[in-house]
Image (cartoon, rainbow, N blue to C red; front, side, top):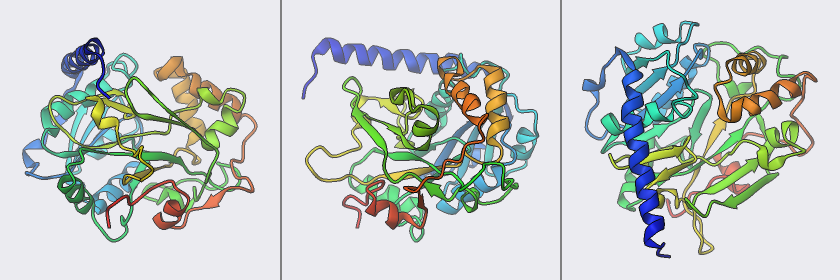
Length: 338
């Protein structure tokens, strides 16, 4: 379908505005450790914004190092728990700090768009949160480079991964999370279904909602539940920009990560380790800060729901086994990647 010229011009203007905005907002970043001179040609890069995540960071970096990420470019938004100090000691991390508003930077995306434009061009770039862990078909036997090589050979520029909320059986507080621990030793369960999928006609991306957060916190307003569709892995170019978190990008073609002809395109999952013993304290902190989307209404819902000490497990819950199980359930796909 060829869109009317005024629609294309409007998207182009928005893309240019977002790029310009990212360059302006990036001025708020102060380099703490800039090791980007160590980035090699063809390296896979990870881009992260965080605040007070020192407990999660050891396993997070280990997971992506095992997959083959060569360098991490991190924005620390005024952590006071030692996150910045810990990251500064990591030889494969470049770190920036800022006291600026997370909300005013479009929830960190202006900062990351600026870093992606400056350092990511020509690289496969993974943009994730510290509680998001990418898995994909064959991830247990093939490095991320094998996937990106296949994507290159297939002339595919972006790779989607649905955010799959993981949770424990029983109270979130029953088993405290330890630094360096695999979070999925605790949060082993997920919803195999119970998802709403729509298409965003303006940008072309799918919009996915539901899962345990939908039924536990947004049962009365399912369309207000957080979006689960993500496009975290992109072969970046200077003309690219994330529009809303990693849910969608411009140019629009980067959002066409699904098949409409009855087939399937390759896709992965971001295992989401939000629901651990740390969740209540994190929710309370973010509710006070009011730096998240829609005046932190999502965290208001969490705070209200946590008063009842919820158990997300139900009879339909599935215990995570491997990527083949997720493929059988239709949550990830090999597509034509043999």
